[in-house]
Each structure stands twice: as structure tokens, then as C-alpha cells.
Length: 247
Image (cartoon, rainbow, N blue to C red):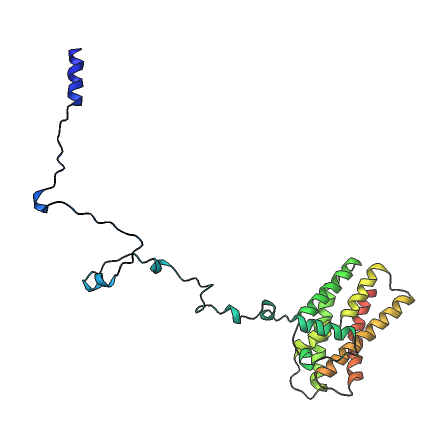
């Protein structure tokens, strides 16, 4: 017990002493001042005193957002996405209505537009209806279509006095006027067209396509009194697509 009491006294006896008194060279006691975080610090005093160190500026670390920065963005003046892709829904509607009604008057500038969105959709629909009928004729559609567009472009270059005959505009008009043949191929999925009814309906669709295409070409390139001359090669071209549909 004597040994344990001695160890206990040694453990509880401080070995070192610590002095927290203020040294005399500091010249007295320290005065602590309160700091208000809401106060604004005038950094100009530090600059005038020759201090070149860094200080915290919350605005210095805020990077400008390029999306909402009016000086760096011009999204308000950006054209719509369809217009950037060359797709004009208004022109598509006007051309489609002109094909459905050959007697309808259409603006000349709309007909000279190289819009290929509608013809591409009609060609895909035509090939899809033929595929439902058990006919894989996509190569024939694009082959006859490309050959017909080039031939019509060369023919219109000879017939018209205008130098602004664009092969894109010619392709657009011929593609839009394929709409009655597309309807014919859709009917062929449900009914057979190898009888009298099919012959009559096919003849009506060919005349409809040729009348619409010739009217649009005459309006687009100011070819007065030449609609019959333009309608004849149109009937030949659309007759080929009608034969693909029936047989």
C-alpha cells in the first residue's frame, strides 16, 4: 500500500509549471476589439499603404454565365431550328394544298424554294406502301426519280427563257406532285388495282399528278401557254410510278 500511495502522489503531482503571465516587453495587456462581419472594408486604405496582398472579394470568383450573359449571347436573334435546317412548314403546307387542288393559285417564290423535306417524306411513304404490298422497289423509286428530275431540269432549261431554273426546285415540285400516286399505292394495299376500277383510278391519279406539276412549273417559271407541253412529260414520268404500283 505504501508503494501504491507513492505512485499515486507522483502521478498527481505536476512535473512542470506553466506561466500565463504577460511578458513585460509587450508593454501591458492586450486589448481585443469586436469585429462586425456586416461592415464593409475599404480596401483603398490598404492600397494606399502599399499593401499588395490579396483580399477576399466575393464578386471576383463569380464566373459569368454565358447563357444568361446578354453581352456574350444573342439567342433572341437566333432563327428557329426548322429554318436553320431549311424546313419551312408554311411552304410545305402551301405546296401540298397546291397539289391537292390544281386550280389553286400559289406564290411564285414558294414554288422556287428548294424544299426537299416533303418529297423525301412522300417517297418514303410510297416505298412503305409498296413494301406492305410485297414489293421492294425502293431502288426503282430513287432511280426513276433522280433520272426524271435531271431530265425535267434539262427540259425546262430549254423551254423557259429564265436562267434561274434550279434542279432543287424542280425536284421539289416533282416530289410534291407524287402525292396522288402515294394515295394510289395506299389503296393498292387494301384493294387490287388490276381490274377496271384500278385502271380508272390509276388514270385519274396520273392526270392529277401531271396537271398539278405542269401548273406549278408554269407558275414558277412564267411559262404561259406551255402547260400542255409540260404536262405530257409529267404524265410519262408519273405513269412509270403508277406501273410500279400496279404490277
